Amino acid sequence: VSVRRKRQFAFIQPSTKDRIDLGLKFKNKPISGRLENSGPFGTMCSHRVQIKSVKDVDKNVVAWLKEAYEESI
Image (cartoon, rainbow, N blue to C red):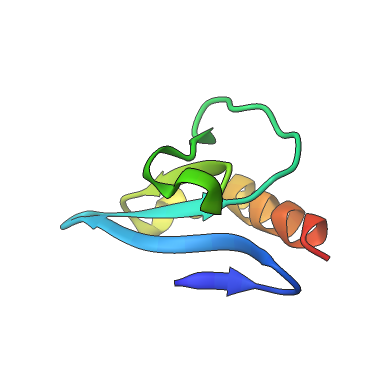
């Protein structure tokens, strides 16, 4: 599922039976911790976050989504 404003800033994809991947598109954000290299998303996104439960959608993920959204305007 592509998430767009003027351009795509996030991508949600079921990856395994128990995990979805949230791809995020940033211009110049370093990879660190849970914010991994985009992996299989290629150029659609610059980073990805693996989500295995609702608890994984924490304040960091919400902040990253907001940041990616703001960069897409």
